[in-house]
Image (tube, rainbow, N blue to C red):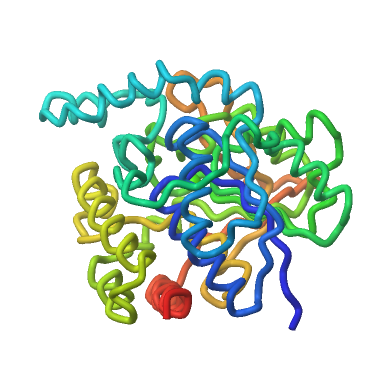
Amino acid sequence: MNQRKIIIDTDPGGDDCFALLWLMSLAKQGWAKAIAVTTAAGNVGARCTFTNASKILALGGFDPVEIGRASKQISDIAGDESARNAALDDTQDESARDITRDIAQDVAKDAAHIHGVDGIGNLAETLPEVPRPFDAARYSDDIIIEKLDAAPGEITLVAIAPLTNLAAAEAKSPGILRKAKELVILAGAFQCRGNIATHAEFNIFSDPEAAEKVLNSRDDIVILPLDITHQLVFTPEMAESIFQTNPDSDIAKLIVSLCQFMTATNLRYRDTDGKNGFLVHDAATLAYLFYPETLLLRRARVVVETQGRYSRGQTLFDDRHLPKTTPNAWVALKVDADNLLAILVEDLKLLIE
Ligand SMILES: [Ca+2]
């Protein structure tokens, strides 16, 4: 069997957890091999995303996989305790006034209002402690550089977080991202509303300069944008059907509880157009790699706005009818959401049975 080798760059994050669980299922089935998990600050601070990734991997028995911590310049800012405490203060107050303020504000420092203060629905404390110290972990950019250098053209890099680590790797080692077999990213909003600013998607908005650097790194980047992930509503019924496969499984219990939490916040923030469920954005990257029949993509020159007062973080197509020598991406604009979600459910059942 031809196993696809994967480094996944992630900021767990409720939907990140579902992507990690899906990856572990595909690995268990023999289709994928996790080379490393590199964490970034994003949905919550660097320490939380690192700890969450550690706990999720341990649940699936993937303890030996190396996990990187957010590259230095970000962990110094977003991972510090005062930032985390500030997020805690914000999200514990659920008054209507604060919710309205959060929805209306142009700039959010993280996405704890969607994912919980700890990033995974306030469930981190219910998961077993993992003896993997944050301070002893290598930085994510260093891991990306080492792994891609050691096996050029062999490893698929999947990025489902702000692109800080990838940009840091490219800055330290120019050309390194071209050594990935493929670069698949969850990013952008093209012909739909944004989810953090009017036209910006969270991962791009969190670090537009990093996104720009990554978009300029190669000419075949695969982008899964909000345009298709807005349709990926994972429902409590789906979680329940997975749970029934093996009610004793800790992963099954996590899936139900996390789905319950994420569904509540997604409804509160009107992310699902009123549908009862939550958006499993990050899972779309694995659908592209392992079930490409669920997606339609177009070739494009994609640019990112790094300056605008209202449009910072917006991704745009250059659709002028002028000769282009520099298309840089394939962008998914259509998805067979029913089938993608059904496949995800069945694969998660295989993980826990
Ligand atoms: Ca993510």
